[in-house]
Image (cartoon, rainbow, N blue to C red; front, side, top):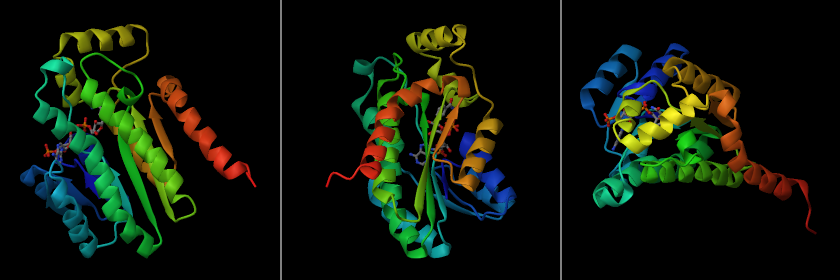
Length: 253
Ligand SMILES: NC(=O)c1ccc[n+]([C@@H]2O[C@H](COP(=O)([O-])OP(=O)(O)OC[C@H]3O[C@@H](n4cnc5c(N)ncnc54)[C@H](OP(=O)(O)O)[C@@H]3O)[C@@H](O)[C@H]2O)c1
């Protein structure tokens, strides 16, 4: 199951996994693009608005009824750029719902099916914005920081079960999302400064999609791109890994 499959990274990823033999369930609000892609890929389209929390359990139930959910890719995401105090509170709530709460609720709904079938993998598409704090991106960065920590916490809870996770932390991708982020001048300047320091450059979307497929196939726990920026998420990942090691490596008794 791939959420946010109507365009961008989700659509590329869906095409790649279908090409490798998977039957894909495509989720997004835009009915026509996912219906067309599903027809092309021999998959199924499930139009849904992930900003509506109450529909998520039923959505997952319908998809699971049509076939096993072996891999859940929480890729759907919204961007919102602007001065924090000037952003409409409804748009902040919608962003936190789609980027953070929906992946949590999708995972919560899918895990019981994965337990029953004794296999499952959850991929959460986060961002380097979850570790690097840039002006103009307060709700977006907060949602992605939450998604990264959710993935680490869920992984700890799922330890010893056949359900695994991949956390995807990527920098700017050549996409319409990046174009809209650059409309806000403080964000554009911050991104430009990172680019001048060779700490950011737009990633090729196909390359990101291929890395995600490889991570799914090999059960990798992390995708961090571009590689030279991996140091930033490593700083936030270190205490999580240390806790994991302490919990499994030491016997307090
Ligand atoms: N682009 C980047 O530079 C970049 C960098 C780091 C991380 N990311 C993350 O990568 C993921 C994909 O990004 P992208 O560049 O491919 O974005 P995109 O082109 O804007 O696509 C976003 C997808 O999410 C879906 N979506 C948005 N709101 C939704 C809702 N309420 N319910 C259901 N689906 C919804 C959209 O479909 P509909 O509009 O049809 O609903 C679309 O398919 C996102 O999570 C993003 O935060 C992107």
